[in-house]
Image 1 (cartoon, rainbow, N blue to C red):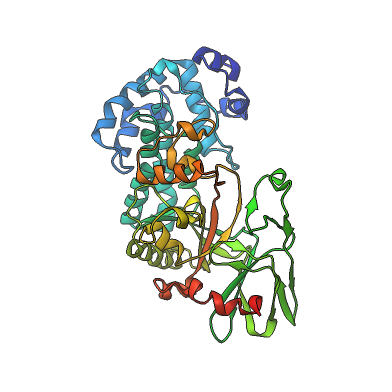
Image 2 (cartoon, one colour; image 1 turned 90 degrees about the horizontal axis):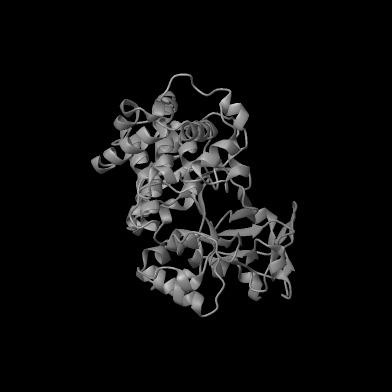
Length: 428
């Protein structure tokens, strides 16, 4: 059995050694005696193509790639280590910086990791069998994987097939979590972890959110991921006091920023309806466009109904998401009729701690360090954002929530419409 360094040396790329070497001995101790590896056999992966959204054009490249890996002890051991790391340990360790074996050729080298990703399907099916998940949801979820991962790789690599390593973790999630595609969106049922408290007025139904105490904000109410980025700014720190008498803190505007002015509310009039630790539908947005308000609402309803039926012991309180799609700067860039802008105005936006280039990879699929002068400007969205950044603006990502109790009011801009009343004390 080869060591990790010997494998990478034979493959011809040692750059990923630090990550590849993690748990190497443990995975090699379980290296199958029977060769080729089961997930390299055509009778294993070929039936998985259609359920996961791969057309017949993938078959010959996959056959060629699987045979080449099987003929190479070094590539076979690396492939097993990748499979084992993805699906065997109880704690997932991200695969990052691993080589695309040059021996496979320029056109096929990205397929090395597609074969690993395909191996998730039988594991996912076994897990879904235990939950009695409907066939249509399985079909949509499998095809959603191809749409979210494989197509993104092709777009960023001049049509060459493959999967980005930073998205391989998705194949792990399908086999052990509540990740499903329901209509336009994907969801995972998980506890909220966004340092936010959300209150609803007991009589009017108005909603207002506050950040936890001790968070640092820019003068205009946004957050940076790197504390050093606050240097030289008149930054401020949030406060939050909750007792039987008052709720006192710096409110989030549903427009996506925090107010430096402290708001005090009578506790008897307001009910805490969402906090960290509460179960939520964490939404992920597959690539593909067509995010009309109607399709979004349809997916939201599907998500609510599905998780209430199949995970009844974990009732969700809200749909939440963190993404460049909920960056309120898009309202300065795109027309008001744009789908993304319309969606933003139906949910409660609030800031997340962002790096300067967070989310831009999904827009430009530009590998390596972000360089504004080198990103593609092929789509109208790419051009609009690049021009905005050319003007010196710093990019952000954003959080959002949509309380499930407010879903029936989707389309009425409920949070924005009520903002003036909910924050009336700020302007008193």
